[in-house]
Image 1 (spheres, rainbow, N blue to C red):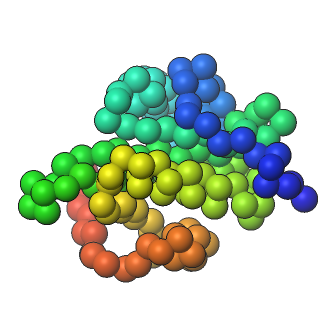
Image 2: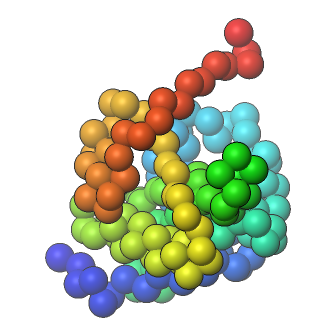
Length: 153
């Protein structure tokens, strides 16, 4: 069992890109998409790590990155306030169900409050009950419907 104090959550730097990519590769999504898209992922991760509109946090255990979360901050012209959108939350499969996702999510919520972000949004697949339970634990509710259309159609 991993003790919570053994997990370090911190802001990611360019030096963390390889560790973040290892986490992505460890997932089912990574298996499905990496063959064709590795260069795209690496280039855009580097851009995200250097863009002030995005925040990327990593979770470390024994000096290895075992998870990460990122979000974007944007102004809502309709609601006249800053909002945040969690884009990714991934934990290496070996380290799932050990509190790492919770620790990353709590860190983002804390930062969002400090930045006066009034609403924090996240989406996940309906069938991802594990993620929905985690988000619900931290006050996320089924507030809006997010529709999706593939541009490949």
